Amino acid sequence: MNLFADPRWREALGNLPDYLGAHVRVSLVALALGLIVSLPLAIVARNRPLLSGALLGLAGVVQTIPGLALLALFYPLLLALAALSMSAFGISFSAFGFLPAVLALALYSMLPVLRNTITGLDAVDPALVEAAQGVGMTPRQVLTMVELPLALPVIMAGIRTAAVWVIGTATLSTPIGQTSLGNYIFAGLQTQNWVLVLFGCAAAAVLALAVDQLLALIERGLRLRSRLQIALGSLGLAALIAATLLPGLAGARSTYVVGAKTFTEQYVLAELLEQRLQAAGLTATTRAGLGSSVIYDALKSGDIDAYVDYSGTLWANQFKHPGIAARDQVLADLKTDLGKDGVTLLGELGFANAYALVMPRAKAEALGIRSIADLAARAPSLTIAGDYEFVSRPEWANLRSAYGLAFKTERQMQPDFMYAAVASGEVDVIAGYTSDGLIAKYDLVVLDDPKQAIPPYDAVLLLAPKRADDAKLRGALTPLLGRIDIAAMREANLRAASGDGPPEAVARWLWDRVK
Image 1: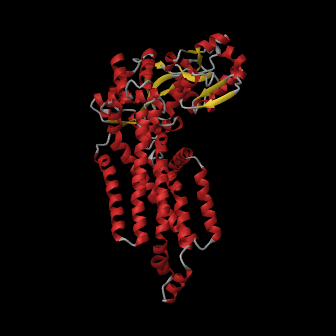
Image 2: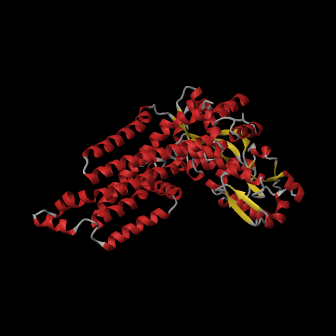
Image 3: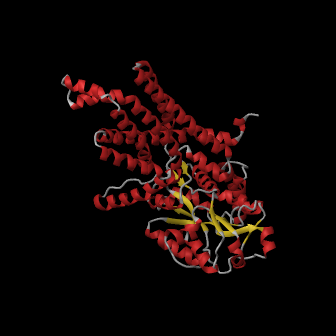
């Protein structure tokens, strides 16, 4: 069997130059920044126990913060700084993707470099330092000609550790908009394409090992004073960096960037938008796997040009409207709110993907549960699972308030895993999505919401402020409006989640179905 005849392998290989080049670029800049900051700090702190203890303690605290959280925290911070810079100096910068990833990864790289530099300098024999001073060397000469050369092998060991940490953690930068090898992993998890997951993990591991071994060669050369090993390691690193960066740098830049959130439907719709733009003769690329808290701000600031969102999500979460409202009111409020930000609501795609409480049909019938009102009486003995956002969203607060829901246990997990979990009995209820084809696949039932506590979620197509008058963009995407019904979207989602083809192929199938 030829593995590379499998479209999933072809998809993975086709994206490798872009993903690998972006991964190396962000890792290289982050590591360089970390070294530029860490090495001078370590040199200054080496004979100052209080300062060195404080620096190592602070760097250690950074290491206790989960990588994804640290990356995500930099985005709102930089967004606020960009707004402040714009208001004060008329100068702004992008808080999306590369910059927050570089800053967070640079912080991650500092601990091993600080620790090893201080340790290496402290380990230099004091007699050698005294001898150097005795022959008239200045403190700077002692540092650069005696201490640093002797400590360099230990420092290189710290740089090796920092490089591996940075390369591994960079895979988590996808949700804040930085393309990386993590794109394989996040996309594969959402579409249950395990080829992509394995490919992304393997590519990141091979890259980290290659860099580590080349740095080890340089470290060994420094220790043995072998210029050949130092030269070979340095040339190997230069060749690796060039081989990974040049294909991406040589590629043509796309005119339009389409955004997507972190679940299957969004991957399919983003591919559909990209294909429609390309069919109109426009160059486009997809920036997928973005968190809900990131993607709208990225659109508003012009870092992406278009994406599909949901009316209820924007109304309740982005614009903080309280309570419950009818569909027409939600859409009217939404157009007003979006207009204030300069964002264009091009139109509705024709289906709604609402949150809904979902149970196995057999269990619901056995317990006599047809609606959320029926569920409330049974909830104290049941377990519910939702995606990572659901329990912190206003919709969940509205549901609990409207129906008095109080479950025995609340769990969070990847969206597609929720369906397998509820079907296998691991959990009793999930906060699913009404357009998901897995509902039919697992014979689940959507519980009625008689109090309409969950707002409407029409799929709406949004354009960035800078694209408000872009006739070519509008012309390419307008044919999608009102064409995609719930049945077509459910089947597309099921195809993507069941491994019937990558999102790109499913998007082509969807367009053939609705055009």
